[in-house]
Length: 468
Image 1 (cartoon, rainbow, N blue to C red):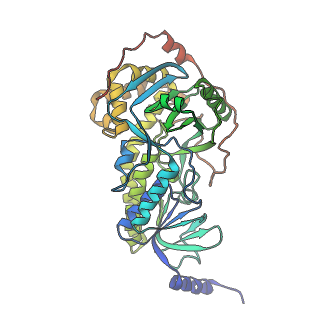
Image 2: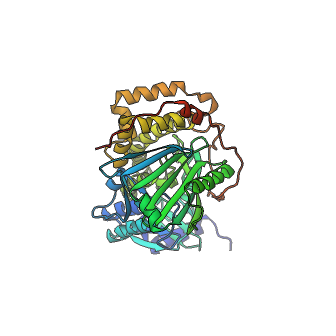
Image 3: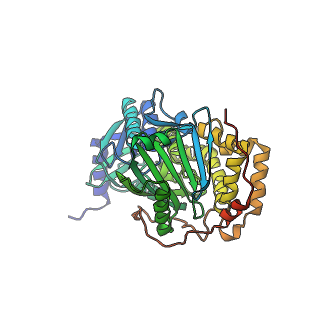
């Protein structure tokens, strides 16, 4: 006998009657997912946190914890800091190095495996249930697997179906949940990183100090973050510059005198940044963190964006779960999107303008931040969390006027500027589900060096006093 619509309805009714329906299912147990699970569990809801890997697991990330990240952690969370940063050395493609120091800590450094696992533990203590080794293949909001319009079906790779009143996608930059929602990406970058063990004498030289090197390709930079007896060394640049990015990484490690040390881990990762009009929800499904393309466009800092957006997603997922119909669920999802855009969206807009300036005038940025006390103090305030880029532009007339002047001077016709990074240079979107080789070997030259010459001819900037 052929199965028809009535059979499907009967099967769906049977599923709904026997299945365990969770209030909130969170996909991905990184900082965004753990924060979402914690927020929903603290509200007293039944929360399931799904993670495809076993924890702890390595994640390509510098591991810098700035002020907004610290402020977004659960109460009682003790950061597993490997170092406390009080000094930053800035250089321009290996030259014009200058170190700035602060009496107060600028930011902390963590190892992601420990940090992520600790966040998950806090979510579990709040009442969330964790399942590792659970790979999600898709979500469905219609069809025979969905018993009613208040339910979402999360289908795992092994065929199991998990039902929920709302779903939060926090499954990374190649997110399957993001593909379901229709996340659109306007900026994709390739990051390469190595964890390099060093002897005590080398570790001591780096203790409490990081290096930020403005790189040779537009928008690129490198970093050295000390973590005890290991240095986290990495570079990032536009996707499509794979070969040049690899050369930059090799040259960077060599000029630091670290070529003779064998890395314990060498990895690559693609970061993806959303477009302004990219959706943050679909039906009863929300996305946050990397899955939503939420990160700072200039620095590509993502931990604070993951923690903040994850918390908001968890809070609004509870409201979506409580919604009695599609109209109410849509209203709650729109409120979540408004909360994201009013906060992180403003930060991202300013970050795009800073990136446009940095891509076009890295030498000017280097001279400003190393030579002008207000610029260094602003950097210190942002890393500590006492100020934000967006807040400074809104409240500081001088900063706002300076950005407006720079905007007018930028040649946006070449695809560089506040209208959107990399028109003609960047890809507008990424394939659904990802799958790119993070160590891509695509072509691309190393970029111009006019800024290096310009800075070389400029007079040396005055010393900047220590920030308070």
